[in-house]
Length: 360
Image 1: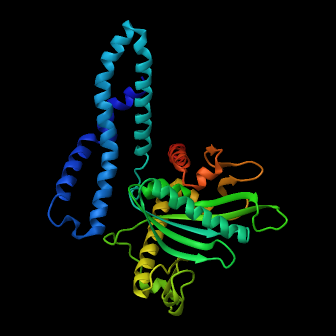
Image 2 (image 1 turned 90 degrees about the vertical axis):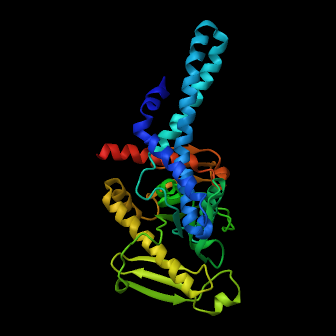
Image 3 (image 1 turned 180 degrees about the horizontal axis):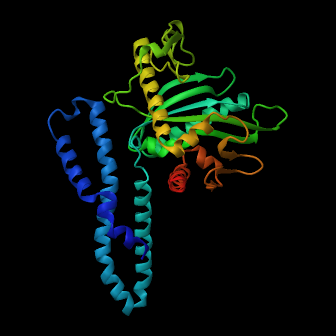
């Protein structure tokens, strides 16, 4: 049976005993007095518990189910009426193994981190601004499906419709591991709602995903390499936001990376968030440089416009979404826009693993 080989090697592949012990240690730590006094560090511990349990509990299910399956097989040899029940159980166990194999692909050094997702409108005029906002909503709805936290770090609204750019922090176990493959250009084809003649419009938006770097992780950035600009925040936020130069823009001179933050009314808080965003971007760049397949993807990021997209979204002439790398597709455009993108994320994980094997 297909699941038996994966089950027999579970101890070495997933380090089952170590993870089971880690669960006990974390639960003891969570029960200690004062654990919740530091909410941010407590959240990281809770997220780690979810990650480890996400591997250990399915393995425990496999262990128990494999023990129960043997007598069922013996009974099925004598009674064909039980055969359907056995086939259903085998199918369920194969699905558990598939899920575990997918989780084994989330083994990068930053995969367990939260994700900073930056969306920029590209070619396409007002349609591109509207498209960028649609993507912002898509990722936010995906996060809500998994009970992840979504924190808006920066948003620049377009005067007519949509956004020029936005950055959100998605906090949750394996958020970066799942979303890192979203980096690239996303292309939308539809009848433009902003064109009085009802013409078809192609719009582009660029997505960039970086890992959330915790404060205790050191990413050395000399202040002499960073230019800081302050400006008045735009968009919603009340009169106070628009009257003071509370927004922060940081430019890392050696790489040209730029981050902006206007989420808070306090310039001090925006500066702290902007530095956190910059550390995350530079950490991602360094990680991509160390990995050949990531480096190839990183070179692709510089391209914008037609031919550079990683995923195509169609509302005309038909409704569908297709990934340009994996060929995975869905026929329900609106479901995808409502956050149903896990199939795309999983297919990219498998594609990246296969590509890495081929390059090795």
